[in-house]
Length: 140
Image 1 (cartoon, rainbow, N blue to C red):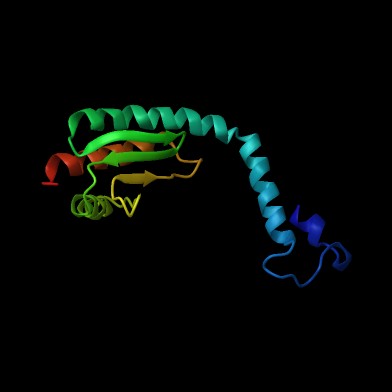
Image 2: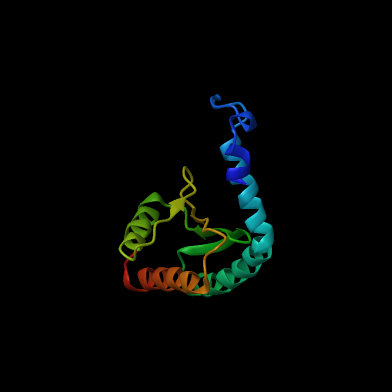
């Protein structure tokens, strides 16, 4: 697609502003949509999200800090007792496992999990194992 659009000066405008059409961004967006359709990433996100939730549900049942699970597909919130101290500590401890998560500040009541649609089962297991390890072995 890139070559087709940029192969000739007639085919594109050499200068554009941030808020006007941007052919390179359009090519990137179209390519992304083609890959999403080709690899059926929506169905993959749904299936992997269910697998992720099953693993997280076990954590929810074992640890008082985990209050609920939220979201759809791979857009997952792990609800936590709303206290900034424990959540910050949990985030810091997960970093030691090379896992970077964000929170739902300002309420400090959930970890936001927004993995790419292309993650594999091993990454889901790695995250859940790390979360369980931190919750089991640390005084949070």
